[in-house]
Image 1 (cartoon, rainbow, N blue to C red):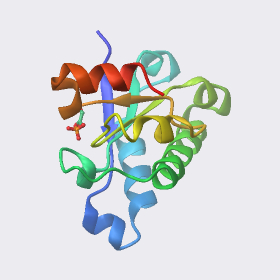
Image 2 (cartoon, rainbow, N blue to C red):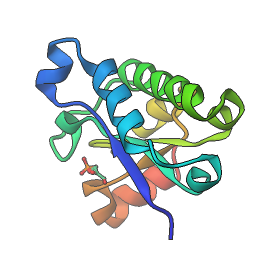
Image 3 (cartoon, rainbow, N blue to C red):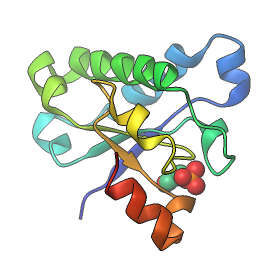
Length: 130
Ligand SMILES: O=C(CO)COP(=O)(O)O
């Protein structure tokens, strides 16, 4: 079994410029009692609350910026080598139209797909992008 540790800010937090401080707090508090060997099998996902099931996707720039911050914060806690090898997924209204642009960014290593996975056609187009 692979646990998925989902973190992300609300729209109010984003609009008030707190995205990075919220992510940092969630990472530090959420992973506080784990060591590198514990979290080796943990998957981290950036899921901005405002994008989940809303049809509003983070832009590739917004997602990349958040993923880079998450990777750097994880690196500060568990070491840069671990952080550079650790996959970080994006979740929040991923669909066949936005998967390629999201996946083109260096710190976006996969997707956590909700609603679009319930329709065979759209899920297949996501899996088989571009
Ligand atoms: O929460 C999600 C996947 O766990 C994202 O769901 P949606 O893709 O429906 O926004």
